[in-house]
Picture 1 (cartoon, rainbow, N blue to C red):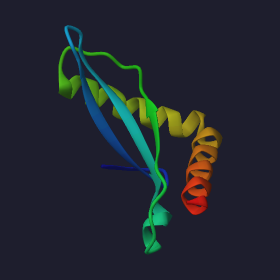
Picture 2 (picture 1 turned 90 degrees about the horizontal axis):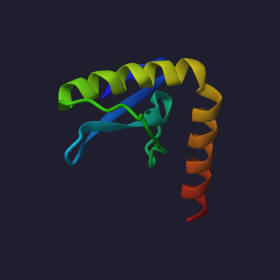
Picture 3 (picture 1 turned 120 degrees about the vertical axis):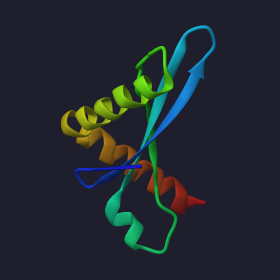
Length: 89
């Protein structure tokens, strides 16, 4: 898990048969871990594709940094939707 600009990011590598590796980036707010509650998480495909798991993880980590910088509104909206869905259940 990585700490990036107020978020925690978990990179989840996935093997693509006959094609190498890709990864999912799962985001959560750091401040949500202070509460003793279920932490909302939002997952996004990174669309990286590399021959090795470690290369895919490195590329996905860089993708996540750029995603936070360029799309923080999308990320925050996704986390709010997840939070609302959890409260509804």
